[in-house]
Length: 452
Image 1 (cartoon, rainbow, N blue to C red):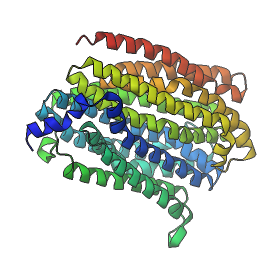
Image 2: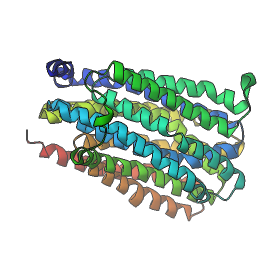
Image 3: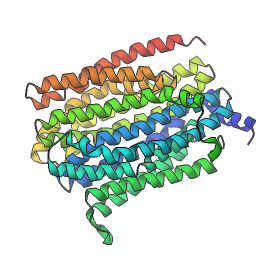
Image 4: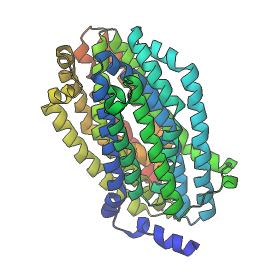
């Protein structure tokens, strides 16, 4: 395909009305992310039917899974930003090299987490609890997810290539298919239906990685058959110094930002373990539930980032500001819906996990208090992605560090010293208020710097 054909195809990010463009780019990913969140919830629902300790084990494994996703998505954000900017600036050779380097980096990330599974999984779980059954469940679950993480790394890398080149509708198919397979396999493998062996927590892990591999295979197919903006070549996969530097200038702050979240979950789990393991189960259940609200915003951001990056490369300030404004409005509406749901029916949400009376006593006030942070969370999440799209991922990192390391963890720890478990959840809305102030200051600073 000629470069002229590629240019015409990509022009929609520079000419279509920004509100309509953002919805066009984002809706497929938002739907896919909601399906992704659904299977995360379903996964925990079935695990909870094994026992509360099984749910706690999966909850304790989640920070490491989150770190795995941080590495994959952070790398993808860096690739996405460079690829979109290159296309916007008509630098097609660099765009193609970036896409091929993305595949190489996915393979390297997989090797990293094989190491993590072998040597870090067990001490990681011991650092959060001393309950033997929880550690046993968590170890086998986490090791399967690490050893078979090629699926998630390949899936995320290939989906980012589709997103950066405007082929977002295909990511709906890949993520939805992977999620549906996971949902179908969960009860079959966990409880041994239809002649399959009863695998318990092992079955939950196998179902998860199976869905990821199928999604990765579909994403590869769509890139090879439908994505005409890039061409794959084994010889072109080895990165250059310029490509690596450009990717990780954005990717490292993004990886560190989400990694801070993983570290925060780790230490919050430690704080909660001093009260009761039921509190850990509540916290884990909350994270699965809130993903149904947050995931669509991440999908919105995945649609926003290439638009902002493209118009930054094309030096179109008006379209950048307009896209950011629409993203903020859409995100705030989503978070408002989430706030209402968590405030009105927290007991119904917790009963999805076969919540005991103790889990309901702890969980109902927890969900209501933590969800107050939703009021500002949409603004903060979109702002962080704007920084990444404009090549200032360090702002996202600083905002995340201030919110979680300097505010959330210290406040939660200090409140825990009072011995009042329900009061610990106040740390979440307090941290979000501080983050919103920082985000607003950085947004003002970065937009003023755009002098074109």
